Image 1 (tube, rainbow, N blue to C red):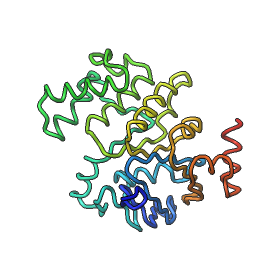
Image 2: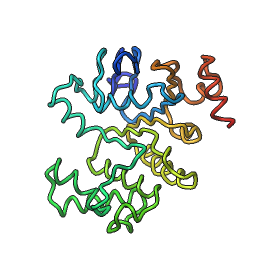
Image 3: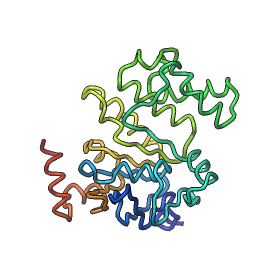
Image 4: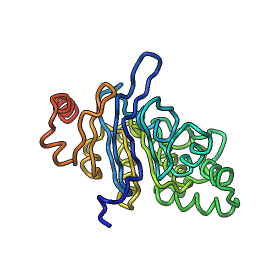
Amino acid sequence: MQASETPPIIKIDQVSKFFGEFQALKDVSLDVRLGEKVVVCGPSGSGKSTLIRCINHLEHHEAGTIVVDGIELDGGRKSLNAIRSKVGMVFQQFNLFPHLTVLDNLMLGPVRARKMSKSDARDLAMHYLGRVHIPEQAEKFPKQLSGGQQQRVAIARSLCMEPRIMLFDEPTSALDPEMINEVLDVMAELAASGMTMICVTHEMGFAKRVADQMVFMDHGEMVEAADPETFFSAPESARCRDFLEKILHH
């Protein structure tokens, strides 16, 4: 079977989302295949974060369908639990529990949601802290870490649930500039390991390095989707050209 013939692991079809009168997403369709890295970019308020929040059902879409790894998101508790076990998410803010050590933050999900023994959860947590290059921080509390380290802990925490898909919502936008690369490097390593990823980010160097597919959104619409080479060298729409012009030459 050719890769192009395998059904997409994420299929978004004609999805619309409203917040009151405001339409945040307008008939968005996107296929993501297993192991594919998709980078979503666009100006502020373009619907990028809303789109990925719909994929793990932090937001409920009003129209269209979203199917993740064979499960249709229908708003029911059963589909929600199934999706959450398959999809990891990393936010701008690290959302770590301040009163728990790094290790305890990582063990919480596997013990509670996956019913793992504490010793297995500890081994798993240490494995993923190693993956994000901070095993020596295991016994510290979040506030003792830099922002970049906290975000890497947040990535490791998601990985402890052993998801098939990782979603990143502007994971470096709250970080000081000198910490951005340490997080992007971990994400790039994750990409290289074959993880299916959707990343909302303005980090275009990272996008060029890892993306299989670039998506540009504006005013809730998916304006353009292309491979990185085409996307950066010959964007079709004026809106996309303007955006890239601003972001690449600021």
